[in-house]
Image 1 (cartoon, rainbow, N blue to C red):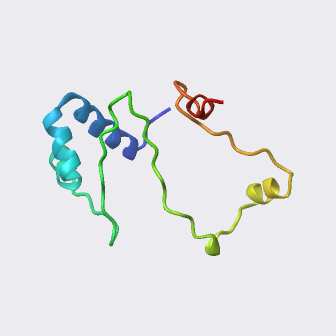
Image 2 (cartoon, rainbow, N blue to C red; image 1 turned 90 degrees about the vertical axis):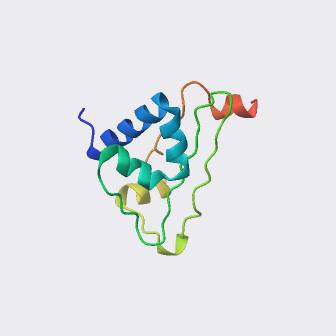
Length: 108
């Protein structure tokens, strides 16, 4: 399977951060400029958006990211989702880090 441009870019950034502590520190302090220096390409974030880079390399820490609350006013379901809601489809699988499960984390 061929990687997308975005996946290749992310792989490049992560590999550099894993190998170079100075780059990782700079990336966390100023992600857009650090990525520009690394790749030579300008990154333009959408208006009103910022980028935060968190160091999650400590394997002894479990990180939980809270996404923005969805705006349910503007949600439209596709056919597959409508089938699931009406009981006619299977729910999508939940993909987790194979090294730990929520059941393990919650002690169940």
